[in-house]
Image (cartoon, rainbow, N blue to C red; front, side, top):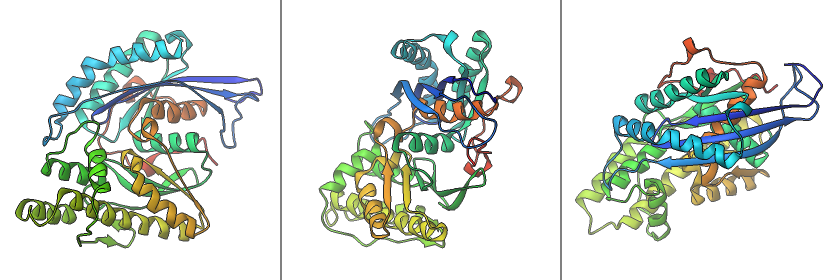
Length: 355
């Protein structure tokens, strides 16, 4: 696209890579048109952002087949709700964006099937989106962060990222399980509810804790490891319940793992000379993590950016946001290529809408 006439892009986003099913609609306005080069900075207008969550009983995780069944039974209702909220119809869409990966196979496939079907029924182009890039672009749009070091923390991912030459490059990451997965699994040990999320309930317990329990601290260069920490604290919770309260265990777990994340994020900031940190992903909602990251950034003369639960938890509008930017650079996904993948790294995406 290369025209100086005013342009708009309206995108429908479908996200269902884990237990959250989100549908969002975003409108991008380009008052001076869309140039063929340069960074895209459209006016962002949120039209709809609806979500429904599959929550298993306390003490249990979610199985891919159960999550997929939830998504299949809920998605049409959510799409209709999004259109009602946006006050538009399928005829107003420029593209339909869906999560191509990474994520859980069965839920991803269920949502991709619906996106593929709607694309053909309505004759609207399809855009496959990287889940991680969706989080980053949503965070940039909402907070106004310009060129931050990104800490991406969720149930399935833990990465420190910085942008360079049309790629979100990974400086460091988990060597085993993601921080959100660690929190979720420990919540099961304590039999904490899954509603609204295990991590949220651990955060509330941690606020009532005061005694710090020494845990393994595993930073290896720019990478981190959480599996050993989880095994260690699980043993404490199960074998010495009278010595360590659930509140102190949650408090210690958060403080220990968040300190690890602050360390590697600060190192990335120093390496590239950044003054901004953007925290995205479901764990990014944690107020204590934001506080610790904010203190580090302030000591370096910088600033931390974060969003609330509407945007840091998996949602459809983040997929619409990233997809609309890609679509404005003429990127579309053919039906033949509209498969999903459980492994789709952040640094595999050509970020053509930035310079």
